[in-house]
Length: 253
Image (cartoon, rainbow, N blue to C red):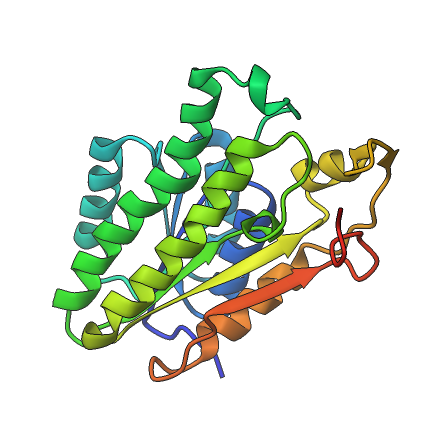
């Protein structure tokens, strides 16, 4: 039985990698999917793939760190679909490893603006829709990353942003209770995407060495999100970690 019959999902960062995999999974489960991202060609491709699955797709070029752009995105969702049942806050950026004393203010702000502020803007708009729509409620799933609990060396901006996403998740889960809005977080370690595979090659370790770390199939991330999304709103996965079994995460440092 499809999970999303007549349901609507929004995936940010939907054009590639984890966002693409989750978007296609949701479509395969019967969701109509709004796709947000900054690259038109990639969004168009995912939209076409969803159409081939027989589901509706809406591709909207969006910089989630831009408040006006985010509001325009949700206005489109209201117009096209009339409601929102699931938000997957996936959009995020990182940068090359940089010692904290060398990080420029603009680099710090760019990571925080997308990874944290962008997730907040989308959460706020989704919250407003979900509490007022009928039937009321919905689910928000945040992509936290394993850096939400344990940093890599020389990644202070990314680590700080993802630790803050955990606070965003928990505060949203708390405030959402009275409105039937569930919020959880998935922390992902070394999924085999273009970004993930690059990061796992010659990956800097806490002792200063570099190694090539194991990766795992990004389709398994989509399966984990599928489980989180499948629960009735009276149940919630607050935190879930999915990772390459042999990656040096447990005991890192």
